[in-house]
Length: 281
Image 1 (cartoon, rainbow, N blue to C red):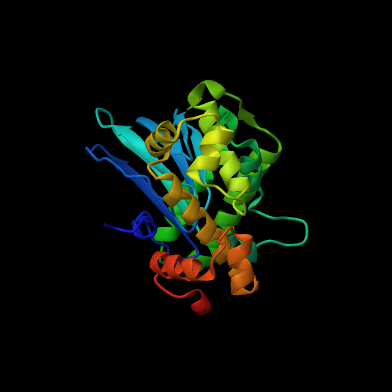
Image 2: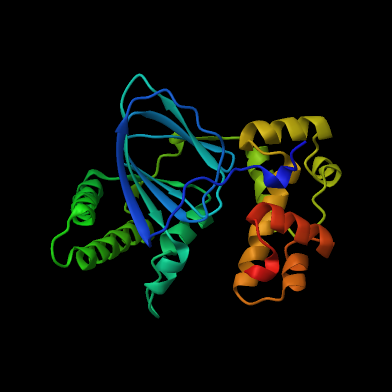
């Protein structure tokens, strides 16, 4: 039987600082729940799509922006009777950090989205038009071989991210929570798990805390996230530990701070998940 921590749920790759994809298709395709090790922004242009992110369902309308943070578990549900058009932006987290200065952090939009616990921004017509112009210019520049195209692409990317951050910070968007469907109990459960990774998060503890039978909790969790409770918690702890190690924290301390009580268990799970030992980070 396959160990839960070895399930191949990471998809996509990014070998550049950022990458833009403009896609319009009309195909029958069913996605599995997955995550990326980079940030993703989806600009929805047309189609019939519901996006599932960390247990919540978002019903998209043209002009919506979806923010999918690094390691967020998600998948789209696509109705193929109409074309699905979107512009998708992959962004390395370390690249975003490298562009910041003392007073401007372009990852602020992702932080604010996390604070709102609402991944969707619905643009006003004015904001949509301005942002779409920049996106088209960036798309053209990225394909160009003309002198200075790489510098222009970087400048346009910066312009785009500054515009997005201003929209989020100034709340220049339409508040429409009718496009969101979620289970309040599941949201509280996921929130509890992600803020208590150091604690005992056994199914027994969680079922008692949230007044659910163990069977019902496990079945509901799998249906809403695509993951078993154990697999979800282990993955979140591994990514947290990896983040701590990357910041210079000692490996054993990082394991403990992330909720692993046994270093051997942590080391084995880490190697199976990341395909290298934690000492190789």
